[in-house]
Amino acid sequence: NAGVTQTPKFRVLKTGQSMTLLCAQDMNHEYMYWYRQDPGMGLRLIHYSVGEGTTAKGEVPDGYNVSRLKKQNFLLGLESAAPSQTSVYFCASSYGRGAPSYEQYFGPGTRLTVT
Amino acid sequence: KQEVTQIPAALSVPEGENLVLNCSFTDSAIYNLQWFRQDPGKGLTSLLLIQSSQREQTSGRLNASLDKSSGRSTLYIAASQPGDSATYLCAGTGGSQGNLIFGKGTKLSVKP
Image (cartoon, rainbow over all chains, first blue to last red; front, side, top):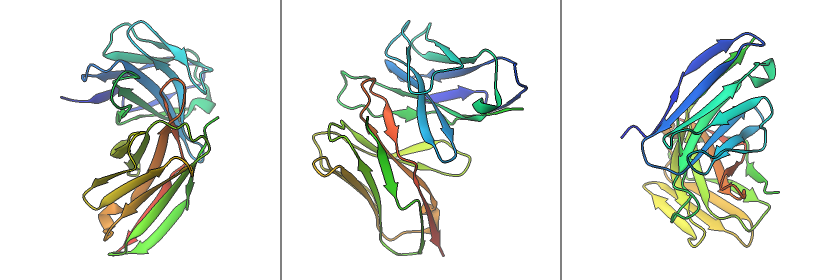
């Protein structure tokens, strides 16, 4: 049972390049989330999904797109990277609103630098 | 809109001391509260989850309490050790999406 995994762990992009971050969970969780962590700002929600085939915007969605084609995977895309997207990205998952608890499980993070 | 505040932002204590980290939130409709530990350059490790119907949770030397009426949670660490040095984050499930609203953390340093 690997929990929540993220690929890649580190990445350096040039302004305007695109990339996709992959999050995978093996706990059969319904809900999945993407957060970004910036110094002095804490963690903020980018996008989330309440089930396979669904996605929705969080607090800071601009410049990102997501897809949830399979229940276990949640992809975060940057179409045209900007220096403001330099951050650490965390994926999380939980059973969902109908469960006894909302406990969220986090991946190890992806450290992205945009130059 | 739910906001979570953690005080102090940084704390340095000698080894063996008992300590309390504070977390306050603005919306008493918070559902669950979760405490995390984050080591430098690492991910988040869940320490304790307090569900809305509970008042406290304990795990080893850690005890977390939740008082929804006053909008406060505390994390008590007994007999602190240098290995406890890390940033501690509290987060409440207050968003309509079920997402966590995070505080900015308390950076704890335990001196040998």
